[in-house]
Length: 185
Image (cartoon, rainbow, N blue to C red):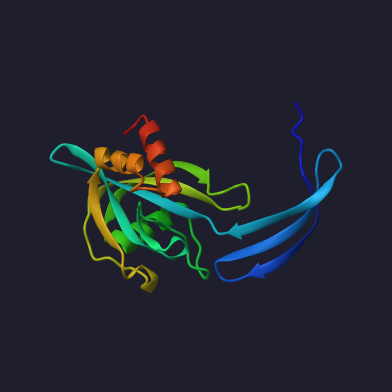
């Protein structure tokens, strides 16, 4: 079956800052009608599952911080993107985010998958990594992360957090699903 495509007729940037660009595209749909698509272009990011066993119980390190757009503190797995003036491979970013947010260093980072953040309106995607062989060190948090805390939680506790809504970050929940599907773990 031929894939129906939406054709871009024109594009203009409506807004831009160091973190994102909002553009409006005039488009033609497969049936010939025309319309407008608003698209947010953001740089890709990573989510890191820092996996560790304690007394035979598997768990993952989590972080909690205040998330301004929703006005409350939330739990999630370490995640983030390169600053506007830097770039590099996703595995290098994963190691940097893990070190920055938790102080942890990993002997091994294994790629679990690549997902899209919100592809209905945003081009951003993210890579999920499993970090193992962890050692501790000092955090290197950015000023925007000064209120961040981190702690280890068992996988059972994390799944309970998902059920109760205490863990509501969609990227973290999707990363947990990739971990659950991983045959190597």
